[in-house]
Image (cartoon, rainbow, N blue to C red):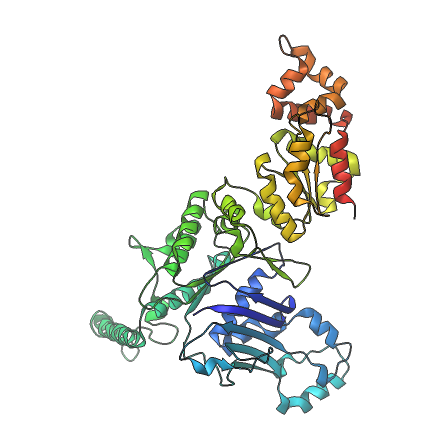
Length: 519
């Protein structure tokens, strides 16, 4: 039971969006306001099939703001926009009521739809509101309907799909926690078991009133103490989750996040079909993050959707499972075509900043701490601005990893300047080595003179007087050049800290910066 496609129309930030999902794991990444949370919300709302849930969210907050603005240009009943969420499933077997062509593709598929549209029977009332000429959108006159692709209604009380949305950004929200516990309880018991539990719990409450409270009630006359037993106070509302007999709400935030996620991912007889995780990394230590990733990797029996800002989650769960969302458009990009070796490299490599790279428009990759320490100052000298002002990022990676990043750069069209040492052979190390990555958005920069084999030698050659003034007085046996080669990061920091205003930029680095910022 898998969701294979999502189509959105006028939902939240998306006027239109179509995403194809993978069978087991889907990791949504993107910068702020890219729509990660909106995608999880859309799936959640459609699967719930609950009008009350839609109304509690508010149609005015669910509708795409641009489609509302565009509507006011015409302001006629005929041009009122519709909101649609469509979930397409793989073969659901005997659930043929979900099969049909009542979808926007107009082809036969298994699926269901959430549709919010003007109510035709209220068209006269709506027209009167619009005729007033005010910017008054008639949200209150919209219907909220859920349909299977066969055309039959999708009813919330008939649960053909079991799912949970776990938002770790709401870890201290009592309502969210109660809903989470209720969903997990429902997924672990049958309807018959639940009815038995509710009945027994109500009976125990009555027994408590008739025994323990009996002595008190003899004193109260016509008014007696009872035990609440209604929709807001029953077995499901009173349930919690404990670890070592301690309520998880009395645990730290990080432990709460871990327990809730692990509980949702566990395998059981009546397990969840779909798990939606909103920023599961929230409040987790580095070690617990790795443990959580292991749990997610081990969960092969349900489809998981994760919205994250975590480098670890993005890379350790295989970059080919990621779906990249752009905050400036409604386009999703996947990395399915990434080579196996590169995907495996980022799964096994030391913790990296791959997510920062993927979400960047323009990047300078450097291979050492010394270059990284000085690059921002070089950028300011060359352009008069900081890198962030020109949508540029400086990222330090191991020089042997350049090609792994460049493969991603080719797929995602990230403008990437590589700054590296020629290591005494410019042609071999800086030209031939990167021949397969020839592309308009990729260029490698290095000193062409093999004698200037490292960054430190180039720095000394370009800033001889500055380096001598700073480092020569303390030298006894080593030359300034030898000292800079031995103490790379420390020398770079000293230059930045004490000689920042006097520094000159090596030509190959200046060329890299100028190429990067050129439109």
